[in-house]
Length: 272
Image 1 (cartoon, rainbow, N blue to C red):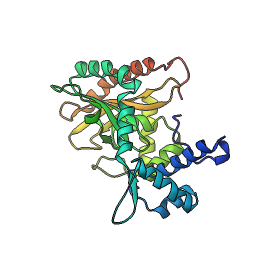
Image 2 (image 1 turned 30 degrees about the vertical axis):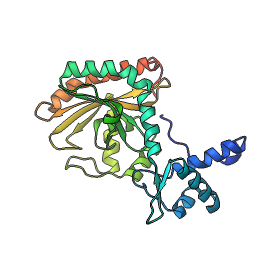
Image 3 (image 1 turned 180 degrees about the horizontal axis):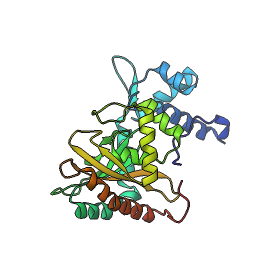
Image 4 (image 1 turned 90 degrees about the vertical axis):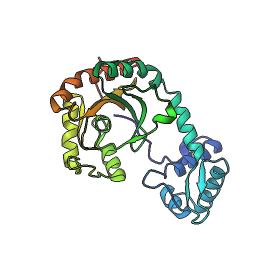
C-alpha cells in the first residue's frame, strides 16, 4: 500500500515548538487542492480545526515568503508561485528521472509510440518524462502536465494497487468525469476494472480519456514495494487496437519492473 498524506496528528506528537509550528503550516497547505484552489480564512479554520488567530498568523507568515498569495478583491488565499518552484526542484532531482530515462527511451524505440512516465502528486498523475518521435528530451518545466487518474492507463495502473480508502478519497475529491462515452464514470465500474488490472498487472485506456487514443500502462514500485508512479505507451486507435495493447503490455510491464528494480524494489518479496 502506498503511503498517502497522513491525517492530522495531534500536536503533542511533536517535541518542540518549532516542529509544532511547522506542522500547523503543513495543515494549512494541505487544505488546498485542485478543486479547492482558493480558500477563505474561515474555510482554512474549518479545514484545519485550528483557532482563527492561529490561522491568521500562519497565513500571514506563508504569504510573506511567497508560499501563499491573497486575492486583493475577495481576500481569499491560494498557493503561491514559490510552491511551484519547489515542486519543479523536486521533479528535477528525483532519482526516478535518472533511473527511468534510459528505459523510457528504450521503450519508445521498441514500440515507436509515445511513452509517458507519470507520478502521483496527491490527486492526479503528473508527467515527469515523455518521449515521442522527432522530439528532443523535454525539460522538467515543459513536461509538468496532469493526467486524470480514473480514465488513463497511468492513473488506473496507480489506483489499482492502492488501499480502497485512498481510492475512495480520490474519487470523492476529484470525481469521475465522463471524458468520453467509454469513461468508467461509476465507482463500481472503476473498481471492477481495477481488480482486473491487479490480476493481469497492466492497465489500458480504451478511448476513455480521449476518443481516438488508446494506451497501456504499468505500475512502478519504490524500494518498499509501494506503487507510486506508472509508465505508459499511447497512440492513435488505428495503430493501437486492443490486440496490440495486449501485446505491448509485456514490454511495458518489463520496463516498469526494470525501473522499479533500479529504485531498490525486490520482486522476490511479496507485492503490496
